Length: 522
Image: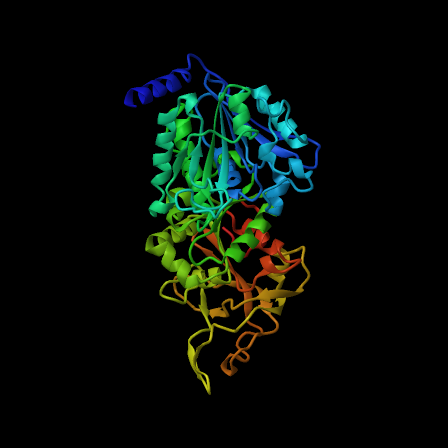
């Protein structure tokens, strides 16, 4: 096996040897241009001899990790060959979070069963498969990697009678292609991200299903292909995208296309962003699943924003340095603080102090306050909280005001300048967000109120009068950075969703908007 691996390394590197100077070329094309389903194709041609590699994601629309990972992989600094990335093949399916092609005939609804296969189908079926297959044939890739997700872990899944075992957390390949040592290295790298033995990656060497894209590349074009499967059961998106990146890091390194580890490269260099904003959304313990989903939809709808989901392990300086703003949404501020830990807290503080932006919504507003021992101390707010004894009810926490309600909110002049597309008076979803007042910390500058609550939610008598006419949204500087703390949930309020993306653009380190719209701008 060692000799086989050495031979593979030699072949990979020998195909990337350059004897002269070549021009790097980065292109963005549209697959199916002009069609309702058109989707971007990103081509990085180094001009240096080397393999042609295609990476596809989002063939199944209910498998977002492959699409997100491919979107990140396209920014990797390859040194030879050509890297072609199609992150969102089934764009409509991804938008609707459905596995299949929306509105396709039943026999064509599964896009990954529509490609040619000897003795089964001579031609692809359906417009998307036809256009994609024609493009793949035209590029004649040396390798194709198709990124997918299974619904349960392959090792531990025990399907009932007549049910199919999930292929989750596996590498599907054809052993006849002779790259077993490569997939073993990829498996080992993927398993380095796994603690639970029941969630470890397996190797499935029966080859991809016939009429799948990877199978067509193998059987029709005679080229190398494999399917990489993570698992969406019990695993948040940052875990799954990282597993895809870790596997692809091994593959592209083995092919000589990258010369350093790139699995933590999530965004392009600042010089290539052209004002585009890259926002990190905290997606780990303490973050509400619904809140993460709502914010993801909001940021995805903003063409000038790309959202990257980060777990607590990725709240580090080397990762945050690639980001323009971080967002901590709803859930539990104390659990978010406990999960990122002291090192994560230091990393966020340093990130904002050095010019990054922070937006905290509900729980994220508790987290960025200067109130608790676990707070990040990014903005000069203290929180109405504590315990009061309620007659007949015993001790009750004052931060808790009960179930979700709609509350009235009024933008200040500063808020109207920032949220200029919205009226002055609004109604917004509220669910126990922080009720704030000045902390008067010597280490923090005073905040600016962008919106006031003009009504209140009261569950216990001591809460009466403590919410109405208090700040609903505040902003303030922290070092060279900017912070916005939002108590209610505009991202979950019909018609107000854009407030979250406007706030991100306002605080982002690459943004011009913050210098025009926010007080205390840097």
